[in-house]
Image (cartoon, rainbow, N blue to C red; front, side):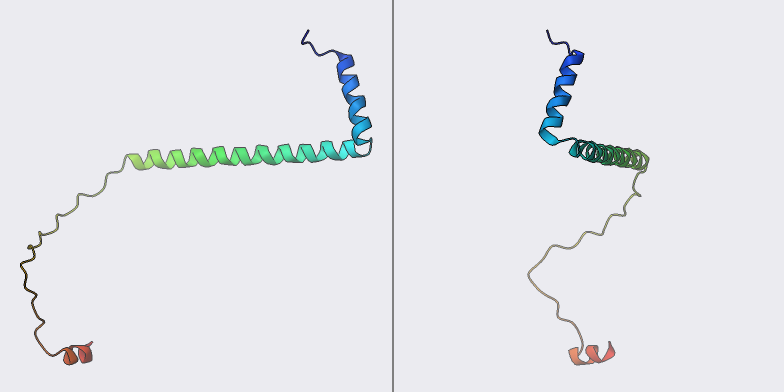
Length: 95
C-alpha cells in the first residue's frame, strides 16, 4: 500500500507543472541544487573544523605546564602603612 508507483510520479510532475509553470521549474531545480551544494560545503567545513580542533586538543593534552615557582608568602596586614622615604617631588623629577 505504501509503494510508490510510476503513475504516482507522473501525477506529481503534472501537478508541479500546473502549479509552477514549465518556465519556473528549471530555475527552481537549479536554485535547489545550488542551495544543496552550499549546505554540503558548509557542513563539510564545519566537520573539518571540528576535526582540526580535536587534533589540536589531543596534541595539547600531552603537554604539561612548567612547574611554577611558589611566590613568597606575603606578610599579613598589621594595621600600619609604611610611608615612602624621600621627597615626592624629587621622585617625580627623577622619573
